[in-house]
Length: 202
Ligand SMILES: C[S@@+](CC[C@H](N)C(=O)[O-])C[C@H]1O[C@@H](n2cnc3c(N)ncnc32)[C@H](O)[C@@H]1O
Image (cartoon, rainbow, N blue to C red; front, side, top):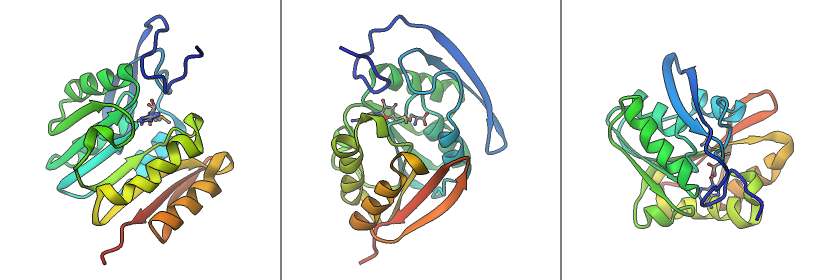
């Protein structure tokens, strides 16, 4: 079977790496391996998402499809009182996210491996932030991710997603509009856009 970065149990030979980077003005180090998304560097879309994500001071946040953990780890560093959940289908990614949380000295992080919202069933978040796995399939994964957000956000909570404008950008925006309502473009750069939508207060 072909292996992807979104395979549940990657079997490719483990090649370890280290990504050093500065995000939101702070230095971070992330252990990576082959078989996970963008294992040689912070992805351009991920960087834009991290630089523009709007985070609550406290409450709970979900980094869905966390990969080796850059979004959730930076969020936790910036907002130490925020409870951060990170989930990913890929068991290598989930293990790395856990290790990277420790490595960067952040607390209040919980990592769970599993499909979309399955590992956080029954929990509600003030923000759900993701660089969604477009390659895993718009209808199979991305649509359920957007549709499910309403069931996992508190009222006024937000869904924040980054997307490549010419790789599903318009479709994703239309999905967010249809399931959550008004969509704001909070950042755009190098062909990527960060989209944000809030669950209505009513
Ligand atoms: C575009 S990558 C982003 C990874 C990481 N957040 C980053 O920005 O570097 C999308 C992530 O979603 C994960 N993913 C794919 N399908 C998934 C699913 N059904 N449930 C949960 N995570 C999934 C992939 O394994 C991958 O790590």
